[in-house]
Length: 231
Image (cartoon, rainbow, N blue to C red; front, top):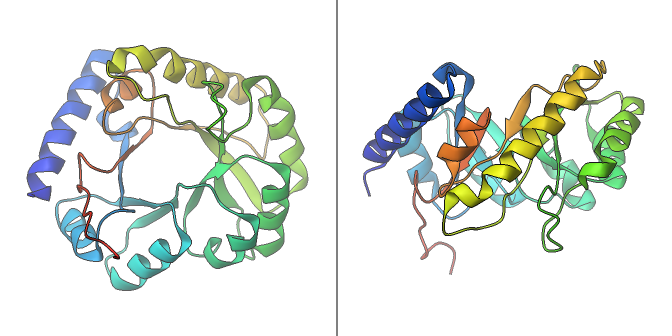
């Protein structure tokens, strides 16, 4: 696959979505989710101009970070087990899946940086039992409770929308997350500026951008899926 062509195609679609929504293209970061591809594919994506990369496994993050020498932004986008926090908390720039108090406690305990680590609070806007995340009605209390963790700063909210054949069907979920983000912003909490919205994947990122996404998480449409990876 030609990753450079993929990047150009994605960026054209993002640009068009921004234009439709009256947004600035510079306000949207395109993240390549690299769980199913090799470090070689990551290097090709870097060469094509991608600067943000997301991993959902701690070993995948460590492996690729050791291989890629170009300075890029690393995101942890999978469900993070508390016992794995110590392995990744200093290896990524932002954690997208903060969804419970026990995880916040472990991040706060293990992180030793000079400034707080950036985290996104994952919200289960669809209410699906198979998805992780804070329920919308519990979001404010959860975000407020994070004020006691001096090593955590809530940079925004993240969600995983339901899969739908028609991407327009998931637009309401993106809109709901944006409304929740706006509400948290209006609280003016020092530990939770909550500027970002991490939402939208390969099948629905245009709708996500139109609804305010600042980070979109793209795997197959950007770097593909190497099914031969690791056995």
